[in-house]
Length: 395
Ligand code: NAI
Image 1 (cartoon, rainbow, N blue to C red):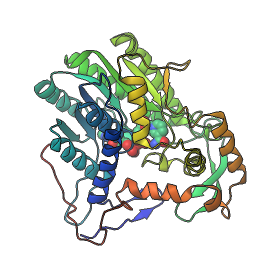
Image 2: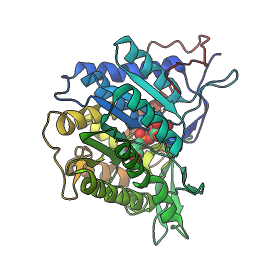
Image 3: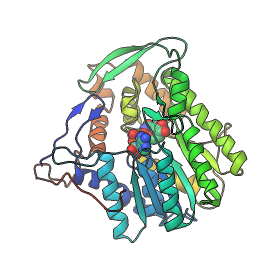
Image 4: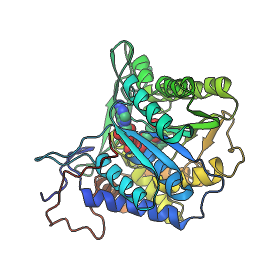
């Protein structure tokens, strides 16, 4: 079929196989242009490996350090009438590129929260790798089924205590308006923590350890976000922030269980991904942030962020640099005082009329489409393409 983008708000319901492959290849090329990782992990499990930060976290150790990787994700394959989801095409492209270089790569498509998925992955580690020495946990999900009770929990993006009103961007129309969000009620905080907190992360590590497939001195990392004061009510001090606090608690518990230095939370930069585009206020902030950081020359995407995470903090045999709460901070460039004060100045000024002049909304839209494989150089979007691409190493 001939595939064009079909977007609605923060959702694009189509994806382009060659475009996604080009996107993955650009990331691989970037990693190869960097110095090889010193003392890299050998066998890496990435949970949430198909898009955004997780995909980058699979590409960096594989192509920068020759690591064998297992990826877990929840994506849709293509059918006769529908394209696959972007993460499916990304993973097919990753697998092909890995195979072309003789790198081991296996992928599992299904629910990472389930016991069955953990069992399947453990079986594969036992059979193929023996043990894993790094586990990256990069899930972003709106819901989770508790594997033991079958109960479904939904996460919400809400402030806590009082309503939150702020400028907001309608990414369909380019209109800067304002949004008001009512505070969390009932079980909102507990449910969001159940989905996006560290419980499942710990369950993965416990399962790997109990099965004897966790290498001595293995490291695990999960990702978090802090951001500027203006998004605090909806992020850091909101329901999702409570879940991220729980994630930090899980890291401490795992450090006690598996030894100091085994679990880290890395605070990453705000970037356009499928998950972040669903958060109110954040797309406008990202459009202003990109404008400033691109002008300064210190803008990074997922792949540059994760390359820096590995080269500066995770590879090379020395311990990562941590903040006062034991977190790795690769959001350091975003949070620099000069960047933040420039972005806040823009924030005060931004409206519908000056959006395209003082923000990088054009860059935001471009990046958003690229997530789904659209707008990549060298791809002929007029051409018929096969939307039903498959690989045997995807289970
Ligand atoms: P994303 O939407 O690009 O990726 C989510 C991944 O989770 C995909 O691979 C998806 O297939 C997988 N997934 C979702 N539900 C699943 C399930 N039930 N079973 C198996 N796989 C499942 O999201 P993004 O933005 O890369 O987020 C990853 C992590 O990074 C999250 O913890 C997020 O909070 C964090 N983060 C994101 C930032 C951003 O600006 N995008 C900034 C800082 C942290």
